Structures are given as structure tokens and as C-alpha cells.
Amino acid sequence: MLTRPKLIGLKLIGPKLTRPNDTLFFQIHVLIHINHAMIQPQFAMPQHIPLFLKISRKGDLLTWDSLSVPVLRLKSLLAPVLFIPVLLFLLSGCGPTAETILVEERARSLEEPDLPDTIIDRRDDDLSVLRIADINRIRSLDPLFAVNTATRRVIQLAYEGLVRLDEDDRIQMAAAHRWDVSNDLLTYTFTIRRDLFFHNDESFTQGRGRRVNSHDVVRVFKRMAERDVPPDAAELFINSILGFEAYYLEQREVYFEADREVTGIPGIRAVNDSTVVFHLIRRDPDFLKKLASPYAVIYPSEPFRFRNDGLHRHAVGTGPFRFHASRGDSLFIFVPNQNYYRKDEDGRSFPRVQRLEVMSITDEHRLFDSFRNERLDMILDPGLYALYELTDENRNLKPEFADRYQLEGLAGHDPLVLRYNTRNRFELHRSDAAAAVRHADGDGIRAGLNYPALEVSSQDRDFSQVHVGRVFQRFGQGQGNYLLLAYTQDYLPRVLGNYLHETIDDNLNSALIQRRVFSRDIFLYLDHLQAIYPGQRHPVQEDELLRVEAGRYILAHATIAGWKTNSMSWWLDLNTVHARQPQR
Image (tube, rainbow, N blue to C red; front, top):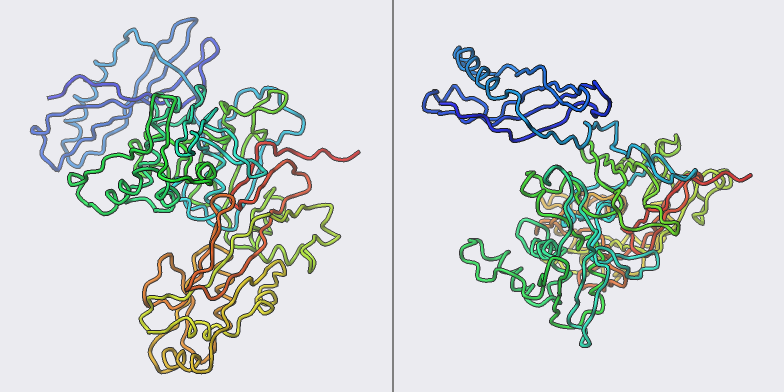
């Protein structure tokens, strides 16, 4: 039998109701409980039925005057029999009653960002829309899946941690408005801002972001250890925070949850809602820098319960930009976080741009054409084609472009490293691998890639003709084996991989493939060493054959000004970006 319907959701699909005699439309989801014993299994009925309610305002009263229910798609001739009593029952249960209807916000579409109705203290040089693009794919909006620079850049626009970096690589307050360090440098106490709220998101009650608390911080660090996320974040803290390693290993290696004995991280403690304490097992001079990385930003737990994909496609943080919409993995739209705590010297809110569109365009010709045709304002890592078209041999803009564009070289370099697989199944060693790529050198790479801002900082040349012969014995024509050179899908590893593959002897069986992990069948692979915090070093390893340092750039139109960078390739501050005033 049917029970009384229960109202479980109220979704506004029309304009705001502000003037007398306005009309408002709601979509209401009603939960229907049905005794399924009365219905055969093949005649399934939906439990959530959308109703469309028309509400009118007359003076101070809200009244409803029409109701419709869409036709249920039942799989039998019993549909009319079942539908009519359900409809009558719903109508009888939805009579006029004294209810308070909270109208928060109007319906939104991708083309219509939810900008504020009025922009307070807007300056003449504020930008309505800023369009930026990256040549690499944005993999996710979940901070723990920030596996490349393009993803980390977007993460740090929408999220912040307890502390943050500035343009000089200095540590600044962020979610925490103060921190204290013990005399022995082993205990860090952070006090969280009382006025810090997560971005509005449908996973919260009434869609409004709640206040950030210290328990959110504890949950973020516990999630780093879980088996279904990459280990990169955990590896930053596993050797410094008390008890983190034990908890990490328990989560990763003990497969049955009931068998896990370590249930928390004793070195991270929420004292109260606004205070969180970290205890270290040894002094770590980089601890605050690690906390300022994209891997340690703060986010809520609600999205993981509300959406199957958690934060992958819906960023929910506390940063200057709030996620608005996306189209696949090629366009992400953000609007200002109206509650962002940082202000300019006149007390006006950051960021100044009213809408931010971040695009991923992996075809470098299409990327540059979009910029040249003014469909983009800025390119992060513009690619070899754009640099070839716009710059001279010293990587300065050609005279005909100097007044139209800006090209900024970034301070930090993330080296590309060619390694040989020490686990390869061909019983080949380092000198054999060096012999396989013996035709590649610094001058050849610079000329082959037409990339003067590139330096080969190290290369192994320790091989002999004996090692060349061993390579041909394994991969020569008719041997049945392939010399596989693997690269990740980002732009620079791909173009360097293409060049290195071209230098391998023609009469060797070889192939260039894309991989994230490297099996024993892969002999050579490219590794992109990306710094996560200032001062992070990547020493030369035993399996390293070649290290290439490539310059990084930002290309922008001359009409844009105010962005900031630092030594981290992922760090980009757009809070003060504005339109450059024309010179008079």
C-alpha cells in the first residue's frame, strides 16, 4: 500500500520571485513508498517522482495554483492502473498547507555563470572574463590526483591549505590565521580562521558551504593514506609526522578493514574545532612548505558522500575561485569566491576577474591559433610551435609581436629525465642503455626540438662498441624483441620522446609508447621531475641516462596584467589580474 508522500527536495527552475504577482516554478521530488509485494518485479516503479509546481506571489502571500506530474514509463499495460491512483494520492497529499518556502538562488546554466547581482566597488580595469589555456590535460579537480603541473595549477586556484606560498616563495597564512612552533621544532599548532567557509556546493545542506574546522584537516591527512588515491601526497609527510607511516601501511597493506589495528594518526590531533596540532618525529625544515603544496589543501568530506566521483569534477575548497561548471576535461569555469578573506589595500575583495575559464588544448597548433585569434588571453606552457612563431633565437619576442604579446619565462625548471628500466627482462644494463641512445646529445636535442632555452645538464656516455653490439643482439631485426621507449602523456615528455625515438638506429626494432607505469618489457622511459615545494631537490639516480632542463613560459596578450608567479611551475596567482589601461 502507499504511504503518505514525503518531500525530500526542492529545486528552483525559474526566475527569482521578487516583484508582486511574479510567478515561480519549482521542481519537487517526492519520495513514494510502495508495497512491492503488490507489484510483479517486472513492473518496477520509480521511487522519486518529479512534480512541477507553479507558485504565484500576491502581495505578501505565496499560493500554488497548478500541479503536473510527468507520465511514468512503466513496462506493462498496468501503467494506467498504477499511475492514476498514485497521481490522485499525490494531489490529495499536496493540498495547501502553511509552509515556509526558502528561495535561495535562480537556476543556472553553463553559459550563465552565477555572478553576483551587483559587483561592489568594481574598478574600471577589472576583467569580466579571463580565458587561459594549458597545453597539458587537467586530470582531475581532486587535490590528491594532481599528477601534473596543469592539474596542480587549477587546484591551487580553487583550494588553499593551512598556509600558502607567495610570489617570493615565502610562507603566508591561509586557512590558519596563526601558527606556533615549539622550541624543539617538533610541534606545530595551527589556529583556523573563524570566518573561513567552504565554497557553496549542492553536497551541503541548502547548498551553502559550511565553516571549515580542524577535523577537516585531520580527514584530509587520513585520506592521503587510503589505498584508492595516489601515494604522492602521503610521501611528502610519511617520514615526518608521528604515526603517519604506520597508518599509511595499515591502509595500503591490510586489505580487510576489520583486521586493521591502527585507526588514526597520533601525530595529527584536532584539539577543538579551530585548533589542530601536528607532532613530528624529526625536525623537517620544509614542513611548512609541504603544507603549502597542492597536496595538502583543505576540502570537505560531504562531496564524497554526495557524488560518486567525489571531487574529480567538482572542486569544493576555500580558494579565491569557486568552481561553476565544466565541459568534459577540456573546459573548467570558475567564478569569484565572494567570501574569500584576502583583500587589497583598499579593502576590496580578490579576485578582480569576474569569470575564469581554464581550458586544456593539447594540440599546440590549435592552441596557438586560438590565442592569435583572441579567443584566449593567456597560455600556460605555450609549446614549441608558438615559441617558434613568436620568438627569435634568444627566445625574445620578435619585434613585430613585442607590442601585442607578453612572454614571461618562469623561474623554476622541472627536469625531464631519461631512465633505463633496471627490471627489464632483456638482462641489459646502464651502459647498454647509454649505447641505445648514443646519437642524442645536447646540441642535437636543441636543434631537433628548435628549443634554444633547453640544457642537457647530464648525460651518460660510458659505453663501448661491446654495449652497442649487445643492444643489437636483443633488438636487431629478426630478434623478435622491441626496444620500447615510454613517455607520459604530458607535452614535454611527448615531444622529447619523439625526438629520442628518431635518434635510435633505424635497423633496431623500436617503438614509442605512452605509459604511466613501466613493465619489464619497457627498456627506456621518460620521467618528469616536478617540484612540489620550494627547495625540493631531485638528485641523480643510478638509472638516469639523460637529464634535460627546459625553460617554462607564460604567453599573454599585452592587454592583460597583474598575474604573479614564483619558482614553482604550478603556482599562479590570478587575484590581481586586470585589463591593462591603454597608454595616453
